[in-house]
Image (spheres, rainbow, N blue to C red):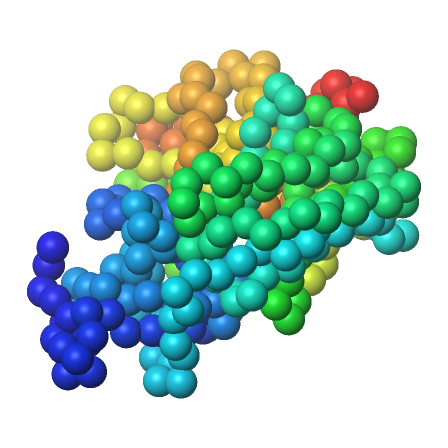
Length: 381
């Protein structure tokens, strides 16, 4: 492993590790030391004030022990030492409670400590999975109330000596999102329900115009089209088309050329709580022959939206660049609501660039994206 700064600090305290709590804006755990232009592959966001055992470090990251056989990495800025923390020989899970409120289903897992976790979506059947690290089960009560409307079943397995896996089966095939975090010493999942009538007009839709302000994005070489300017034009065209159809509410992450940090966009969107998000970008390649449209998703439960959008966009006679999964883009990372990134075309390709500059093309893109959304909603049952 790289330079062991963490171990040096630990040796001063006469122990092979030291304890810390997560802090900052949307801390996330990383699988390993690999990275690309969007950063390293992530287990996912994790709540603040989660206890982590630091065992080593590199220049930028701390290595943390999650359980006996699982470790991860976290950026140093998102950990603060906790000199008062002490590890117990073992931690236990407590009772589970699943119930519904007026808007969502809630799953509450009692814990002895705010310990690390990983969550993900599965399909066919649709379910939410959660791994709890560093715990043994003492759960003998799983209470499920009749107020539940989306959660079908709730159960767990002790898959390793110190890893408990929780399974939450859903009633509908389409995932509508969930949030996860601690309230006191309980890990709580807030699970969104599928709308009774998935009618576009009754939905709250978020549109993200990629880049902005001091983040210009890509720029074409021939006509010097700047991505941040073009994405805003496409976003406004989509907003106008949706409002024309009578959509209940459209949320824009930006309406002008303003700087908006990516994590701040996530926090803003989580507060706005849209039914789903579409982020618009323009692609670029060192090879000017590369062209076409592509859509992106991170979580498998949100793939259907990205597929429906791509299918309609291809009717504009754009080349297919593909439907890309497990994409490490910040706005694809939230599990809170379905989301998809659309790379409309390539600024670096002469043919695509001409289309991007054409106001008529922007209107056609707005119409096709709207049709894609409608196609997706028609598949729900």
